[in-house]
Image (cartoon, rainbow, N blue to C red):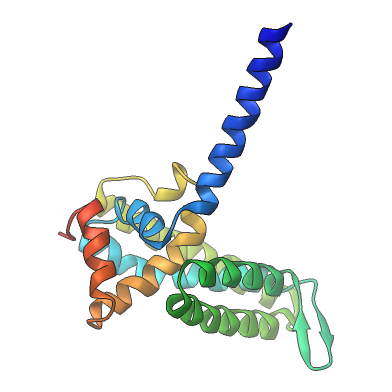
Length: 189
C-alpha cells in the first residue's frame, strides 16, 4: 500500500514539474526550442506570411459571439488576446508590447468581420486559416521537418512571437537575443 501512495506522489510531482517547466521557461528557452524547427530561411519567410494569417483567422473566428459594450468589442478573441499578451509581456516587455499592439489590431479586424453576414465572417476566418496553414506547410516542406507544435503545443503561442523576434533581428535589433538563440539552435541556413 505504501508503494502505491509513493508512486502516486511521484506521478503528481512529475506532472507538477512538467507544468512548472512550461511556466518557468524564459524567452530564450521558448524561442530556441521553436527556432530549432526553423533553421531554413525559406521556412522562416513563409512564417512571415502564414503565421499572421493564422493569428488573424483565429481572431476572426473567435470574435463571435461578441458584445459591443461602451464602444468596445468583447469576445472570446479579446480574452485569448489578453491572456496571450500577459504571457508575452512576462517573457519580454518590448516584444510583448509589440505583440499586444498586433493582437489588438487582429481583434479589431475580427470584430469588424464578426459584424458582417455570417458567410462573410465565416468565409474570411476559415479562408485565412486554411491559406495560412498551407503556407506554413510549404515552409516546413523546405525545412524537411514537421511544425514545432506537433511535438509541443506551446509552439502555437510561441510562433507569433518568433515572427516578431525574427523581424527584430532582420532590423538589426536584439542581437544578444539572436546570438543566444543561434547558440542553442544553430544559424539560419
